[in-house]
Length: 327
Image (cartoon, rainbow, N blue to C red; front, side):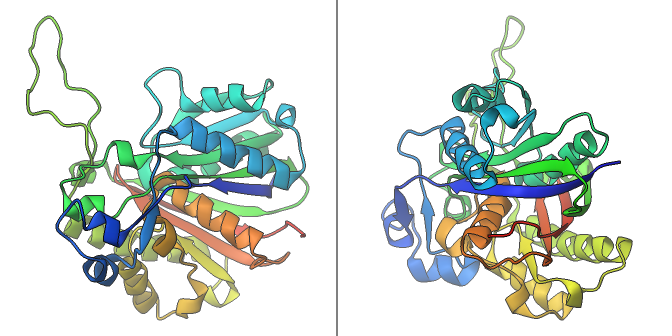
């Protein structure tokens, strides 16, 4: 069986930034209210770029960082809650954009845990030798599915994309990935697509294809599953939190991360946070954070990090990684 390592990362966010003050001009809220409840100060919002556009930019950055050509990629997995369209897969659009002519490309839907699920799927292809190099992308234009009149959700989300290139070989980088779902809780976080409207039914006139969330239930689920995922992946691989340089949580809410830190009795400095700049970018958040850490030289060869996510589905999961990129 092959080992798998990350050889490059990339990210991209729209240049247009919406501050909390700007948001307070369209919905009843304030900068102080948002920061105190979420830790978010701003978010990047598309002015026309779709999910594939953001994903393409992140993919190109990851390829550049890995110092490989698009033709060297033979697997593209794109995770998104906000794809360009039903058909074709957004991954296929990105494949065409970057010229990855030798790749199999498909989308997955695991909401904010999408990047972790993508890693897990890619691992199976790479470890068995079925594929050699994979491009994993988390990309979202959540602004197109946000209800901008609902202050409980519109303050949270932003647009962005992150990507990583994985390679099969003899160097161990991705040590372990674990992911799971709790479909019985699926109704706590939803975003419909189109209503059932056909020859036999007229559909629902009040139907809205926007994000709806039970904040209290998601908060509770997030804290519990992050702690559970971290403990499980440490136990499964005979590590302790002391062995870990950084924990990179899905960037949803600072209070969630704060609760996790207290529950684990951990050093808060181990937990990387950049949600103040991006908000919740769903499937993109962990990948964006990982790229920022890579590009700002926070990681050195041999560092152990944990990526951990939770999201709609409900889904959750974590990955234990030994850093192998030598800048």
